[in-house]
Image (tube, rainbow, N blue to C red; front, side, top):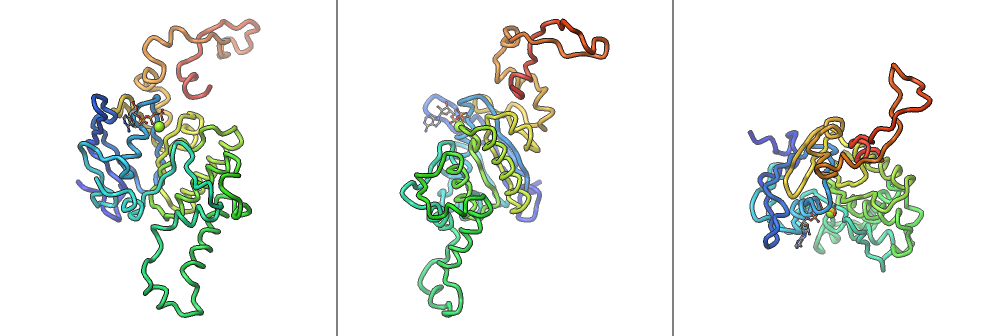
Length: 297
Ligand SMILES: Nc1ncnc2c1ncn2[C@@H]1O[C@H](COP(=O)(O)OP(=O)(O)OP(=O)(O)O)[C@@H](O)[C@H]1O
Ligand SMILES: [Mg+2]
């Protein structure tokens, strides 16, 4: 049954997505459903195909096979700007700001897909009405306030500290008024405080703006804290799709991250106290659990 129509539960559905680069199969037939208003993470080892998947969803890369539907509409092969207009915005793994523009100008550029075009629209506005530019400016400032950098509106993007640059990139994506926001490693390179702030921001975007969020993230503490569902890619194939708790204990996922046999070479740590030995003064040394290495270290 197709439940991807505008009022249905599924916002985006990708079916059988294949992408090859010469002899390398970056995506080997990926099926993926994004729930409306959901928060889903895509994880997987380096080179698993996560960013290529985002590139396919946003029209940057054309898939060799498969179909993508957004609000029931087929968007496979559409140009990136059309996909943005339809309601999918993204950030990039490596910060991509317009460095020679101010913070505010970066957000105004992001609004481009929402601007009315042509002279007619401005002619029809009476002088009392806000011009489209004024309205755009007001909305851009609202978004900057939302992400907490409105006081830096006139700062050159190049002069922002790294963590705030990432915030600006999210602001620019929000300016396109997306229904679905794709974030490619939004906390990479951040210190723990910036990471926590980013988690709060992602939560707020979702709850206050009702935007669905699809997140690629290497920091498992982030993934485990905020995801409702986690999809795991390995060599371009989805090997698991579960809740965080189920993923944490999934043997295939652990093997994809650590490699088969890696469990045997694990660091030794004092055994956790048990009911029988609550305060063992000389605890036995046992290998760290594989789950610990991936999800908590
Ligand atoms: N334009 C391209 N041309 C050729 N190969 C590519 C291209 N883009 C990606 N690849 C290859 O496709 C595979 C998947 O890459 P992708 O960038 O999606 O990985 P990833 O899961 O995002 O990894 P990371 O966690 O390191 O960002 C990799 O082997 C990569 O080298
Ligand atoms: Mg990537």
